[in-house]
Length: 102
Image (cartoon, rainbow, N blue to C red; front, top):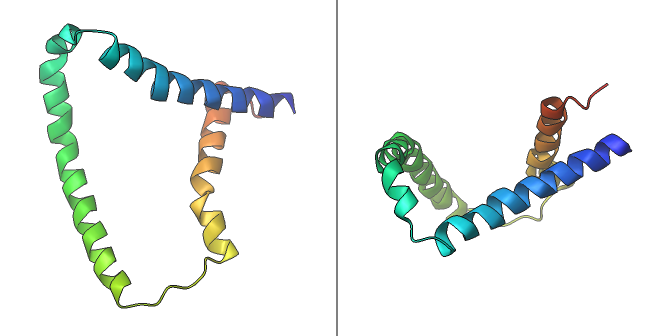
């Protein structure tokens, strides 16, 4: 039970710090001059991710075309389980990262 509590607290801390606190501090409370030193790296990262973004956007548009010709069916329990599998994968990754497994 203690391991699960540690995992949940670590996930909560990661979400709060990386998703809320750091963006607030970096973009709301500074002038942004610190970012000028990282311009080349940020541009490089953007260009590296761009092909993946374009491919995913294309695949989403193709998927939405096929969705228009089908009727909606209620979600099954198997689909609900697969939809939330990312959460369980995140927990397992955190367990391995912090070495909390037996």
